[in-house]
Image (cartoon, rainbow, N blue to C red; front, side, top):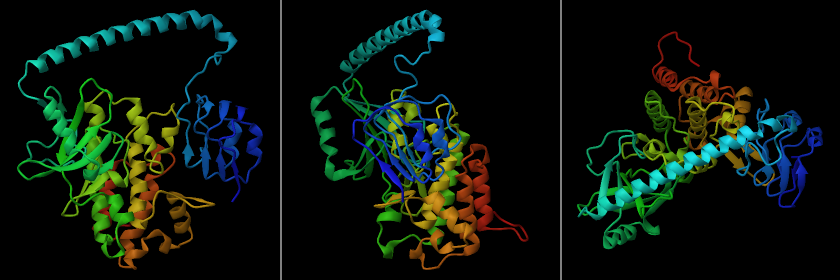
Length: 426
């Protein structure tokens, strides 16, 4: 294993193009320095890279992306499209136009701020004249914990606590660390019980707002997340092949339904798949971006960074449009995770194992033992497992157009479970 780790050394200047001559490099860590400029195009020659960390520097984002990106790449959260002095002198005559555009943008922003303040004042007046201490808004843009309809009148409502201090304090008292179920890109999730004895899940949104708290009430899914069932369950409580196949098929149908409504999940991973008491999967953590426009780049970027290993390569390139095919890539990684029982990216002392690459190499060498979770002890139909693995690899194609859409994925999975006579599968 060849690596170059120079993090936290206060190094300055551009990244040296000569780095590309070290063709045996597999791990490069340049984080927490003061590198400037852009990524040298020559780095595309480092085909053996497994990890390339350039976070926490002062680099500019390239206008065009290299044809080969390191996998997995850790991007710089502080990068921007331009920095002072980055405009060529040949474009100096456009500075006046840019300045006018900036003034127009500032003026528009000022108008928006005034409008927001006016609306806020009106809302405060309405709330002060309302005897109730909580207002519930119907949530019709998707369910963060379930794609299935529910008869619970409180499920899927945005509740904004304000007005009555005693009521607000009581709401906060319910959400303590002992009741916390987990944390996601939009905030922490807690379990509590209503006065009538019904358990519910409450998400406390982590967004800056003028209201004191923003809480979402959801149906409580008692089976926990798919991540815990795969990676934290005991050997005696592992998922059977039939359970795994049903979870994969159910998740595919859920994503296909979302894409029909033009909703991109952006953050598909095993911790966002919840399992109910009947073993059915429920796709979580979507729809909030449409409900709350305030959840802008900060939330989206934090959601993306939390899904390392599931991210499609085009997420690293700002010039490429993000489409439903990004969800297809994440679904492919999820399929391989469910079948193998391994995490998408696993770090050891001297190596980084990327699940997609590991499975692809094992399949090429006809080594199916590394492709299927050993806890099943061979109790699975190979004529189903191998096509499912191949489908997962197709979904993780580096080229978005080579990935099937989720409707096609559902059809393929149904054919794998019930193949027609004489029909060759994936």
